[in-house]
Amino acid sequence: MTLRVQKYGGTSVSTTNNIKKIAEKIAEDYSKGDDFVIVVSAMGETTDELINLAKQISDNPDLREMDKILSTGENISSSLLAMCFHNLGIEALSLTGAQAGISTDSFFSKAAISDIDPARIILEIEQRKIVVVAGFQGINDEKELTTLGRGGSDTTAVAIAASMGADICEIYTDVEGVYEADPRLIPNVSRIDRISYEEMLELSSEGAQVIHSRAVELAMVNKTPIFVGSTFSENKLGTLIQGSIDMENHSKVRGITHDRNVARITVSGVPDVPGIAAKIFAPLADSGISVDIIVQNTGFEGQSDMSFTVSEDSLDNALVHTEAIATELGARNVTGDASLAKVSIVGAGLQNSPGYAGTMFKALDLAGVNIEMITTAEISITCVIKQESVEAALNALNEAFLVNNTS
Ligand code: ADP
Ligand code: ASP
Ligand code: MG
Image (spheres, helix red, strand yellow):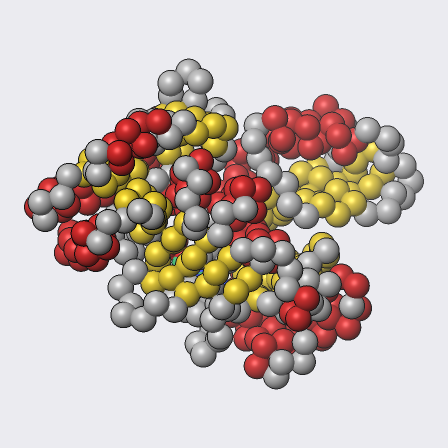
């Protein structure tokens, strides 16, 4: 008997008809003897709609209450899917994240899974029930509901697959796998058949929304392969994420990503003395705000400027903390810019091959895209640009690295 852990995303469960179709598809394999744990996202745009509801009440809603509201989206879709199985004469039940044994830390809206106890799931599976788990949520030590960050249902699925020793975690979505760039923005881009955890982690961390970066991280640590495929497509094509970097693809651009959720904070006139960076960034880290790219200008007359990026949705909160510490440090001024995005090329060995950076900058220049900040990592090169330049930048990078295959 094979245990299969599958996850179906928001578009896949966007209507009751779709949910019925998914149940029928699973029922066929269930009748052949496989066991199933199914993780679901909220229906369609439900999470966005719930956020909008809260914003009608408050510009800065309480994060605990937000997580309680947001978790309802996945509770609805998981119950509906369980009911579909009942209609098909199959024993099934839905579980919330807490009921499924998912414990998290206390960072509301971006909680990390700290532990998972699959005892309840195992108990139900042993009775041949299909277990449907509400994705994207867990519970902290104080028994408060938490959510795992946008796209977090992927992480729920991988965590369950890893904790139950499943051979693979299947992620079903609205595209036929992971592509070299977002197939909705760059038509005719190729699908990637196989990709290492490291390269996939870089692609998702730099914005490839198709899979949550923490899901890839968890899969890598636990050596759980992930298959990404399409929910409703007839063929079984998709992308297998596993193993380490394939030597044949070493020094190649594997993918191009973009992320529009980028904002920059600049602190001007910071005293140029040791310990300032720690003073600025510690309060941000303590409040769970991730800082991505940091640039400090060379000091002049005892002062320097510090710029860093955060996600656009954490800009307001980050500004509050930064302004407080800037006043304490006697910095001249703090500004925020929410109109930014980043584009990246990702592939093993890029950093050691200077040609890639040059080609990237030239391609952006020819497309009239101004580069605001640059950062390189071992397997990626990232440029911060204006949000309105994303399409032009992606097309230019596609031409330079994928279509003409110069890499
Ligand atoms: P789900 O609701 O199933 O979790 P998401 O919307 O989170 O689906 O992710 C799927 C979307 O990710 C696709 O519709 C596609 O537009 C986007 N995407 C971005 N980059 C990539 C990529 N490199 N490969 C495939 N899809 C991508
Ligand atoms: N429903 C959540 C979101 O829209 C989680 C997910 O879909 O994975 O971000
Ligand atoms: Mg998703």
